[in-house]
Length: 581
Image 1 (cartoon, rainbow, N blue to C red):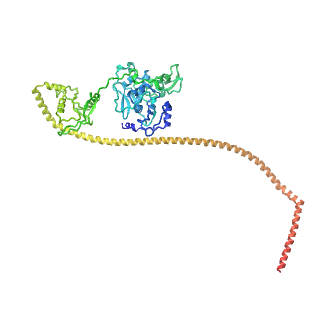
Image 2 (cartoon, one colour):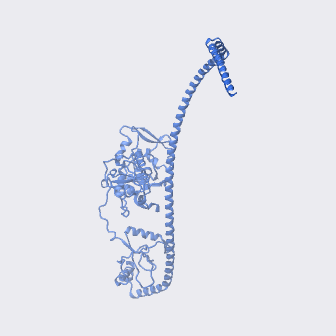
Image 3 (tube, rainbow, N blue to C red):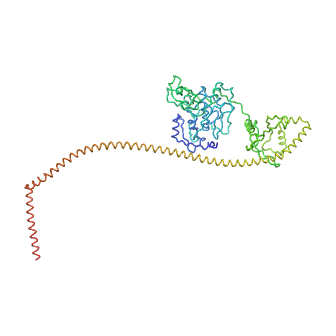
C-alpha cells in the first residue's frame, strides 16, 4: 500500500485547456471557476475558497454534476472532502444510490451506514462493506489507471455546506443502525441485489436521475434487450450487457425523466443537511472516556535474568472494542497450546488456565487483571508488588483458595512449588530459545524492512520513469498530431494550388494553340512573299536600276570621278619619281 501514502506529493498535470474541456464535457458550470492547479500544488492545499475534484470520480465512479443530495449527505456526515475519497470508495457510494433508485426508493443515509463503513486506504479514505450485513458488491472493476494526478480546483460554493478536510486520526464510524430502524421492505429488496461496481453508461444514469446530461428534451432514455424494454435493475445486476441497445422514446406528458429526477440534485438551493435527513438520528449521548473504559496493554520487552525491575514503558491504551479485537486475533494465533511468535511489541494481558490445574476456573472464560500498574511503577515498590500479586489469579480461583483449609492449601503450595521447580529449568531454556528466535526474527525483519525500503525506492523510481515516459509519449503524440495537421493543411493547400495551376496552364495551352495557328498562316504568307521576292523581285530591281536615270547618272559620275582620280594619282606619282631622279 506504499503507493497510497503519497497524498501530499500528488500534483495535477492538467492544463487549463484540459480542465475547461473536461468541465464542458461533464456540464460543470463556469460560475464555479474551474481552475488547473499549479504544478507544485498538492491536492491537500487548494486555493483559499476552493475545493478539489478528481476527474476519476466523474469518469469511473459515476459522479455527476449537479451533485446529488445523497452524496453530499454522505460527505457531510463523515466530514470528509472529495479530495480525500478514493475513486473506488466514491464508486461504492454512487453504486448504492443507483441501486436504490433502480429499486424505486430514494437512497437513505441510514441504510447506507448499515451496508458500508468509512475506512482508511493509505492517505485516502474509502468505503468498505460492514460485517453486519450482506455484501452489495459482487465484484468491482479494478482498472483505475492514473488518477492521483488528474484533479482541479472549483469554488467551494458548489457545495451547500462548509466542506472540511478530515483528520486522518479521527474516529471513523458510529455503530451500524439496527434493522428495527430501517424500512423492512427496502432492506429486504436491496439485500437481494448484489451487483458489480463499474462505470455505467450515461443512458442508465440519466434514466435513474444520477445525471441530467441529456440533449433530447422531448424524449426519455430506454434500455432494450432482444427487442424488449429492459429495467434499470436488470441492467445493474447483469454482468454482461454487451447486447443491450440504448434507445429513446417519446416523453409522456408530465413524466420527463430528467425534469423529474433533477429535484434530487443540488443546484444552489433545496439542500437538506444531515441533521434534517428523513430517518436519520444521531446519538446525542456523550461518548464515555476511552481512558476510563480502556484496558491497558503492555508492550513485551525482553525479560532480564537479573534482579533489575522490568521496564513497562510505551504502554498502549485501546478501547474495549479494540481490546476484544486483539483478543480475537490472539486466539486465532494459538496453535497446539503455543502462541505464534511474530507480532512484535504487543502482548495481551490475557491469562487462560485449565480446569485440570486449578479448580473453579471456567476454561472458556478469559480473565483480564484490573491492577493499577502504570508505566513509571517499579516492582521494587511493595505496594506495586502487592497490587500485582492480588490480581494475578482470577476471582474464582481466589475464592476457591480461600475456602481451602490449611492442610489442603499447604499441600497444594508444596505440590505447586515442586512442579514449578521442576518446570523452571525447562521454562528458562525454552524462554532463551524463544528469545534467540525472536532476535533472529527481528534481524530478518530489519533486513526485510531495508530490502522493502530499497524496493519501494526502485518502484517509486520506476513509477516516476513511467510517468515521465507517459508524459513524453503524450507530448510526442500531441506534436505528431500537430505536425500531421500542419502537413495535411499544407498538402491540401498545395493540392488546391496545383489544381489552379493546371487550369491556368490549360487556358495558356489553348491560347498558345490559337496563336500557333495564327502564326502558321502568317508564316505561310511571309514565305510566299519571300519566294516571290527571290524569284521575281530582284530581277525587277536590277532591271529598274539599269534603266533608271538616277542610277545611270550616279554611275556615270562615279566613272568620271574614277578617271580623274586615276589621272591625279598618276601625275602625283610622276612628280615624285622625277624629284627622286
